[in-house]
Length: 435
Image (cartoon, rainbow, N blue to C red; front, side, top):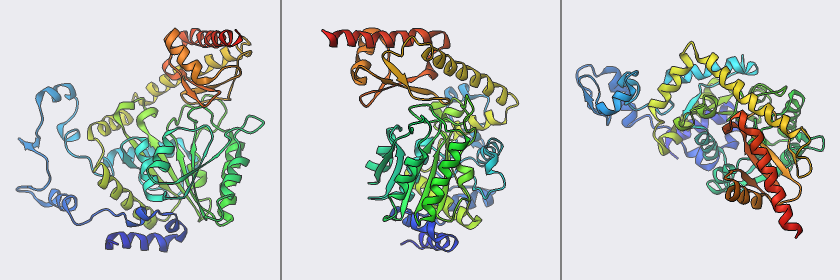
């Protein structure tokens, strides 16, 4: 093992041996090189006041060389804030601004040990880092049966982990904390589990209420007390889009100092929070550990970043930072929130109107971008294809009965027509089946 990797492992094992046990073999081997091009370039940047011939960028007239045709479209920004490489852990000013935002929006994180957010190439990259550092062949990754399909690729296909499912809803149509608890306790022989909590949920748009949140935390604590090391990952992709009386903050805070066997990892994406899907800016933040532990985990995370993408895109990090620092930021964010809330409320009013109950029911939703219909009479994939071919309507089929509808991308005035046409599509297939 590289001496730097060994040093990080020794620190982690000394600070919390349970977290050391959580690391995958790759996670144990990973380190960020302190002697090499990046470190030497950083030293030169600080001290080389005559000539700096280190890193592979080009300079002209004292600023990063660039094409005028590109700079003309980005003239509001200084070339040094868009053309140079961003540091592997991200633009320092952006990391600080995102941490301040997290603390403001998540009171349960305040006063807890919290690492500086590390910039990722959007949220998926953050999950991939978690998979690399903590998931290996046979490790259990516990997710609900209604989940984002990319978890299978990220944790299962890439890292060989075993995905363990539990029903998202219980019989009361609330979050199934008992199902989560059972899935966790079933891993006692392995002594380790990775739990991914995604609220608002994709695909259902469901976020638990405060009591449900407490039950989730209690289930994870019970597993830890039973001797299971739990990597608790909060996938907060749609954070902030809470339209009803659900939890309005991440569970990362309550999980951060829950038990020595629990490691809280918060994954964020400016992607959807700031409506900048193509910018590919996200963050991974470790919580509830000692300063030495947080520093060691940051070094291992930077090692993964260095080994895969080297560093994230600088322009989009600058753009997000500019937004966060703008006086108009909160007002504009609230404006978009109200639009999204209006769409969600409209969908719920339509579904509660009594006009469609003969062919479907819907899963509880109160947040995010999506909702899911549970079809009573037709196959979801057959309906998806029929809607696309006959009515030019795109939806997502999930299994035999579930059809995901993203109200996020439909204007409120068009939602009634959308659901009327989906309903008509069901009737079309019912008519064919009855012949």
